[in-house]
Amino acid sequence: MDLTWTAQEDAFRAEVRAWLDTELAAWRRRHGGRIESGDTAEGFAQHLDWERTLFDARYAAVSWPIEYGGREASRWEWLIFEEEYYRAGGPQRVTQNGIFLLAPTIFELGTIEQRDHVLPRMAAAEDLWCQGWSEPNAGSDLAALTCRATRDGGRGGWVLDGQKTWTTRGAFCTHLFGLFRTDPGSDRHRGLTYLLVPLDLQGVTVRGFARLDGDEGFAEVFFDDAFLPDDALPGGVVLGVVGEGWSVAMATTSSERGLTLRAPGRFTATAARLVELYRERATVDDDLDPGLRDRVVQGWMEAEAYRWQTLQTVTDEAEGRPAGAASSFVKLWWSELDVSLHETALDLLDPDAELEAPWTKGWQFALSGPIYAGTNEIQRNIAAERVLGLPRK
Ligand SMILES: Cc1cc2nc3c(=O)[nH]c(=O)nc-3n(C[C@H](O)[C@H](O)[C@H](O)COP(=O)(O)OP(=O)(O)OC[C@H]3O[C@@H](n4cnc5c(N)ncnc54)[C@H](O)[C@@H]3O)c2cc1C
Image (tube, rainbow, N blue to C red; front, side):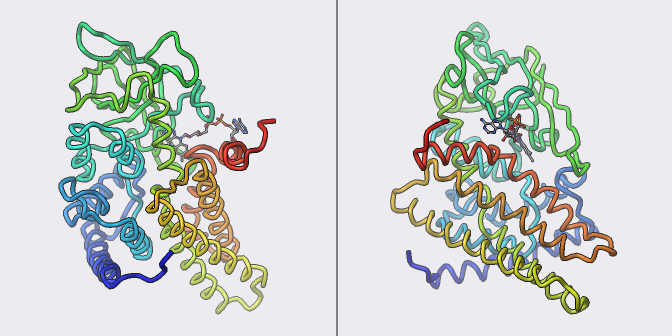
């Protein structure tokens, strides 16, 4: 692994840094300096404005081909972009479930027509995608899902029935990528199909509901005899092969748990803010517990270690050694690191003062990291069985 950045990569970093500093300030000014959470209706609209600013400058998905709105940036440049993004305090990406989860699967398994239609509209934040996998009785055990898609050959399409839940930002999205049982006689992992569904179909009801922090970040999606025509999207509504949805979904989970969803820049930026917070607190409080300093240093080192590990993963990938089931370790790492960085921050904050909103909000969200993208208990099972080769019982 070559740890030096090239002159071109340094120039890219400088360009991104300057652009972000100017444009983030302009975006905040446009909204009167009051940016709401992207998981509320008002905040989502503000964040969409930001997503479109990113797209106009070809920063919405830097590694994508030019014709889809990207810059054909290398994986390294993508990492640089993410580092700079979080360093500058860039907002949550409300398009992330499309760009970071669905898009890699479309690149891998979609038809040319699907790619040509879905990807540019996704980058431009014209179509907003949510993930429709979990159901009231199918979370960790996703293969227990019961949402049905019944073939209607006469009309040329699928009839959808059932319910999805925990659909992140579903109430604000226009499209859903979901898993449906298309073979009524099948069970578990067989007979499932990965469908691309516009949410404005008749018979689809989306009902937003609040998370722990009060924001309407989740939705339930109900399908009641909803007809999904084959030509609802150019290139068709089936991603991959009918009946083979499980293997398509596994391609998505390796993006979700592996490289793309949580770049190290997110955590190195949090660790840098934690160091800053420690310095501020140490100047006003002579009795600060020395154990806190150790935790700050430990958190900073773990964030750096995650960064080096990611550089290794990118090198492996570039040399044809994909992470496979080992991506479960990545998910365990970032989710637990995020919780511990925020817990240290909360312990550092003056208990008599109002707890600072960004740290409290960040902590509340960090708590969900060990649950979404497959719970950490499930990741430990996968790592134990498929990476370490331990017996199931
Ligand atoms: C912030 C957030 C965003 C989300 N966004 C989406 C989304 O956009 N789309 C979507 O489809 N879903 C989404 N989810 C849902 C998420 O995928 C599920 O919550 C997760 O898969 C767990 O399923 P469950 O909640 O039904 O819990 P359960 O599966 O009921 O698990 C309950 C507990 O039992 C443990 N457990 C279960 N099975 C085992 C086992 N075999 N071995 C050991 N322990 C086990 C789990 O680890 C967990 O601690 C989101 C969740 C969160 C928190």
